[in-house]
Length: 514
Image (cartoon, rainbow, N blue to C red; front, side, top):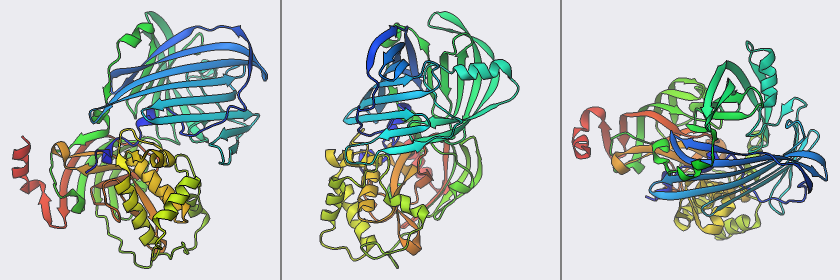
């Protein structure tokens, strides 16, 4: 099995950025520095381990668009995943109006291994223009008049709101620069608190932030005088940042992401690819999308339990059917599609299905002529699984994975989805976790691909682990844009095509482990 099978699909989840190429044509031109700000340092912890820092500078500049507050952030992260060192460096620059409430322009550049991440965003009034790679159509978004922009340094408007009223929650729409959407957020007053950070005390207001679009729950500490964010904890993803001094740079270590993305269950199932049924009890944190009990139930997977603030607590029963291609759409794809399905033919973030290189490669793989769309999917899946080697972090996007001929599970899955879309077959990502027998048996974060096969609906395939035309029943699906942070997982029962194993009959396996 490739090491990339469960290599942390969301390695970049802590950098909050997009993988796009962009133009600098709309960037404000700095004509004069009007005020030089103070350089600040923030410590970054993941899972309680100091593994990075941010250097932040805010100054006032005169540009061709008037006076602006320029906020520049340089980020460094050190991570270790499956014994591989991964270094992340990012430079993020924002231009705001003088109130720090309205964004004018942002430019993000992130380097992580072979991945190069770029993003530009320009704002004029209530219109946001997001720049994409050359040849792609720029995304234009019209915002609601009540939508706000937020930054990583100041939350003055929250300071003003809660100085007037600490009893009632404050609701609002906040623009998400990652996805180009407006997120629904609620802020609640917790208490006044004094924190000692960077060698001095800060009198703060402590707020709870709930993002009802992504499912993330956070705690913010905001300085009562300046509105400066002095501490921020993302509870779902175990990420913490807090004000520090420059000495933080000499104290960094590499955080082991395995502890955050994998969970050992001490059950070895050697023929895991033939799992036909699995029952597990789990407690899982997730973010990226608000989950419900209903959203965790779909063909091949049943969930019984509760979901509160994106904490999943219950029992999954998985029995994935094998699709044999019955009544598959023809090729070219000839099944009628409604407006909901149409978006799974369009290019999107990280799935550049309109790139000529992707379309040309998909067509060359299918040059012998598939018998129908299911046959086309199997040929494309086989090519991705056998020709794209496993790598951490790999190419990231579909085109990056194709160019580098390397990727983790997310890269494989995005490339297969892009191939399918480029030839007219609806495709999407599924994200969750899967079981593998390595290291005593564990579940790890994973991504795979689903294709729409007409009357058969969505059919999952996993090219990364060479399940070219199916997925085994060790896969747990959380959603299309979710993350997997396991707290507890217990295997209750399972069955393979060759026989049944249960908790009561696996003592010989347990003796081998211990």
